[in-house]
Image (cartoon, rainbow, N blue to C red; front, side, top):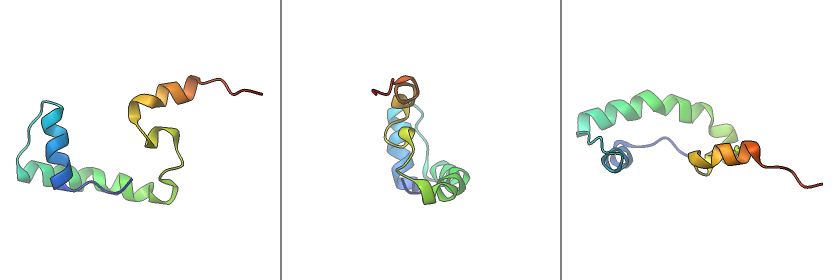
Length: 65
């Protein structure tokens, strides 16, 4: 997962029902960007990286022996 750009944030916000303008999308990108950069070293290795709603499923899944 990479740092989201304002161009990526705008349609996501629109789908969520919270349309934002260019300035707000840039502010969101700047606000959450450091978190994405901090996790860059382990990106793709965490169960919730694939899809956030699947996190609960990953946490409650029983491991077969």
